[in-house]
Image (cartoon, rainbow, N blue to C red; front, side, top):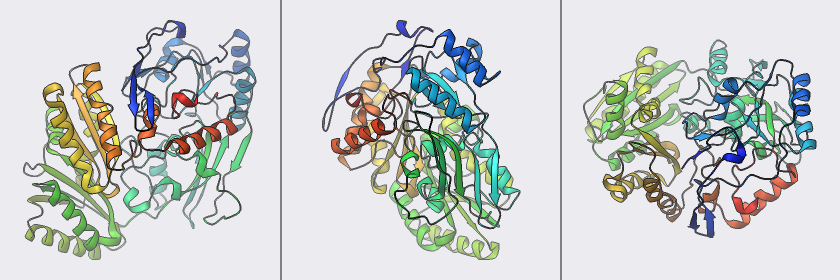
Length: 502
């Protein structure tokens, strides 16, 4: 599902319109562009205001703005002519207050690593980048609470904390580019969710600028605060449609003294699930990640990235991470688990890493699958949450459904969270292939009471498929919340909510 705007003029953009029938009625395809809403267009007077408010940081050079108009997958491209780079919450407040008064649409942007077209404009929305809002405001070494601006890159925060014997509760393959504000705005899941939970639990406070420029200060560092509504939760996962996150306080765990990573091979997915069940029982409190990839993923890693399989060829591979405070204790538990898994014939081969360099090598087999896919052709990416026993059935059913129309159909993801990343590649963008994938994949997911977006969000690409996972009354409530907080609808228009609420 993708949208490509041709040319710099929003008036010149042309799109195909198509209609798909959802479980609660018709919904426009996310491949079809929503119509441009009646927002104002940027004038010379507007540029003068932005230039005075952000000296040297109101960018209009087309070559500099271009990279912020295009998403990481290069599947969605906007036609914005203005990139604003504030450094403070007050500057964000001034910008939004002005844009609200002028009815100018705004697209907030963090690291621009999203996969659903949520981080770039659709038409000529002003791009509001948080990249220069990258200061760490405070860190409490007793409680482990970090407070920082929204533009801090996740990997930089991780390095800062590791020097102080702590870690971020969040880890993503895109950590070198993604920003914590964008992570929170999309409720990113990642590799450590099994151990530390979602951002709904680890984020203690937020500072948010509302559409009219008002600053909502919920930047609490308290772990317990049951006074009234927990307003910050509204903005976690709202994808920038309710307000612009400018600062975050987050609870960070202590850096584990003992880390082990295991790479295992299984013959069947049923054996993989039984290994997970055994793993939870025998590793318990030290289990921090349980990831999987299939043989098609391994083939792409070998072919495109020249990464060698660390064990013998298998239909399925598992990456298990343990983290704890006592290396002897952890090693013994891991040894007992591996011995049981091997003698029970659940796994056929495996290797263990305790040194940092080898740990990174084994993790790369899981983290670099997305990169390998980009070399295999045009990629259709799906992020599905299902009952854990069903997650690979979707991959096999999709392969059967598509047959030879697809170059590759691969499955990998977070078994511990029931989160499947299903990817389909083709030599080039193929509308006929897309029509075969969607809405089949969403109908299949709805049939087993799954979620069409486990952790990537809805963005532009999946907004009109929301009814496969949420009831019409629930979506209507979301629309009312949007109207309450952003009555003119200037924040990230065309994203997350379906067209029938616009």
